Length: 465
Image (tube, rainbow, N blue to C red; front, side, top):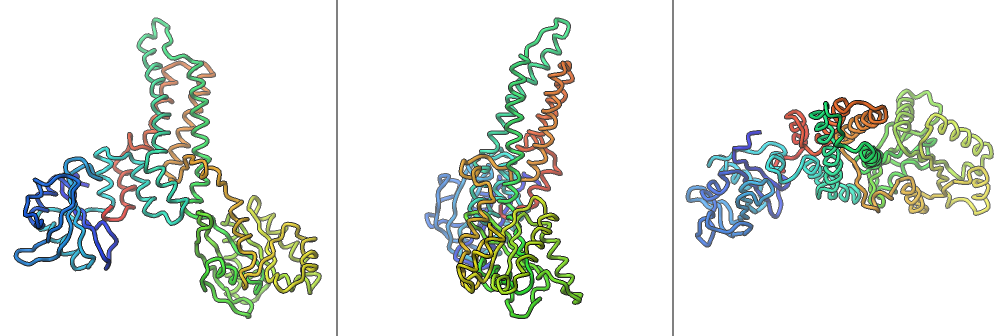
């Protein structure tokens, strides 16, 4: 990306709307805006104060294109850290494109994906992890995702990493200073104090690494497989949870041949529900493929909702035993996953019959998907599987796989430093591992980076941000 050019792009969503914002950023932003925008005050944009908004019109030759507002950001006091003019025009796609074309004709070029935020990073308005948080904030579709992105964008994660890096850098400097006085055999770095620092860093890094499991859940949602025999109400349950007719519901067994997925937020946490084909013996090749896919989705899920028809279970005594054997088998081949056993159509059985089912499955959840009874209890149980403490405590949560990988590498280097310190390793060898740990911490904030990493990060942004 050429940061010397003046760039322009639509900063709001494309398509028709009440208002659109077109952002112009770069050294020539005001000179270009001056040629196309005429404020009703008739004053030059260069003479107007920064952070001010002015009503006027955009003109092509003698033709008025639109009446709009121009917001001015002078010098480095802008999102990008360079002069910015934003036009708030009427949300016609034609008007949007004409204003952008006018800016290009006067010397701007159309911005690439993420180029405005890239310039904010290059100009020191934010570090790399904060820039990535901007993309996460735009993509956030739940309360938890929004909360984590806001914390990272405001520098919570950055501050932790910078603090660790600075403390480690101080000791690295002292150890390397010792190398200059190796003949005098002096120690500038207190080894006991250094050992305590390494323990502290290990603890913080381990906590950040462990938080990635929660971060991954927040960012991508918790996959939940709905499993059971045909016609037990799996599709009805999916529709009830989503509050829409997402899956076809029929009395005919085997209606669901493929998986159907959709996501909703419960208590601010996204859950991705997967309706699967009913599990049974079949000679139908297509249904058999659907059942195979059901097992595959089950293995990939973190939570499994096993649902059965409570009325059939009561009327056919052998059914409860078969269900128990089936659940035990699924638990064996899905070790470590959370199971919720659901007795559906519970509105059709008596309280005495419910007790018979509870004798076999003490943890059973009674539910009527059709009548939406017991759904809130199911949602509470799903939330109980999520560690909400880190969110409530406002702890830093790692959601970015690049940060996670860098932390793992930094942790490995810190462990090497500690082993070397306990083993009496010489200062020059300790310094090598410390420098490598500093390198990985620097990768997170962008103090150390490459064009390849930057290109990969900012290419995922939308144009106009």
